[in-house]
Length: 230
Ligand SMILES: [Zn+2]
Ligand SMILES: [Zn+2]
Image 1: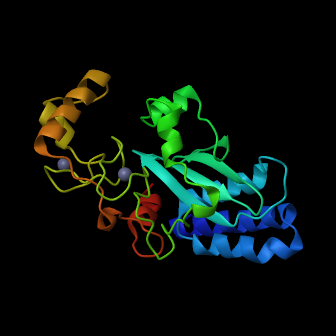
Image 2: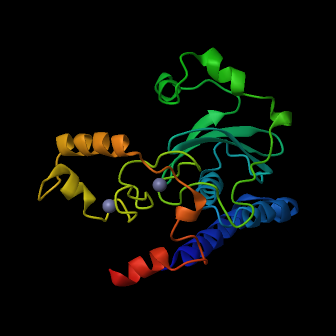
C-alpha cells in the first residue's frame, strides 16, 4: 500500500469513529479538522486515538489542535473540544494521553521533555482560549520527517530511513559507509553504533530538510518504490 493510500485508509477509519462519537451538529466541524490535516500522519494518528478512546467519555468534536512543544521525535499536542482540552504526547508511531490540559506532568515525562520542575512546564501552558491552531500539514507539507518525526533543521533519530549520508549522499541506513568507516564487515553491536555516531557527528550530520523526504504522499515514488522492491 502506498503512503497516500495508507493515509486515506486512516482518514476513512477516523471518519467512521467520528460518526459514532460525535453528535450530529458537530460532525461538520470534526470532519473539516480531519480534512485540514489529511497529509499529516501524526495528527491523524492523534485524532484517531482521541475518537477511539474519548478520554473523558464526553462525546465532543475536536475543535482545535495546538502543538505545545517538540523534543526530538516527541511532540506535545493539546486537543481542544467545546468544553475541555487534553494533553497528548505523540511520536511517529505512538499516541499517549497525558491527562486534561493544563495539568501536571508525570515526573518521568517531565524529565524526558527537559523540564526540571512542574513550574517550568506550567510556563509554556498558555490559557486554553489563547491556544493557537497548529498549521503543520495544512498545506501539502508536514514540516517534519515522515519517518522519525523530527522537525526541519533537527537531526534525525539514528537509524531513520530519511537521513542523508554525509559521506556518499545516499540513504544513511542503507549505504555501505558505516562498514567502511568502522572498517568492519558487520555492524551489529552497541559499541560499534556509538563509534559510528561519533564519526558521523565529527563528519557533520545532515539535519532534516523537507526536500529530503523521499516519500512524501503522492509526490514521489520513494517509499512506494521501496515497498514494491520488497
Ligand atoms: Zn527522520
Ligand atoms: Zn553513505
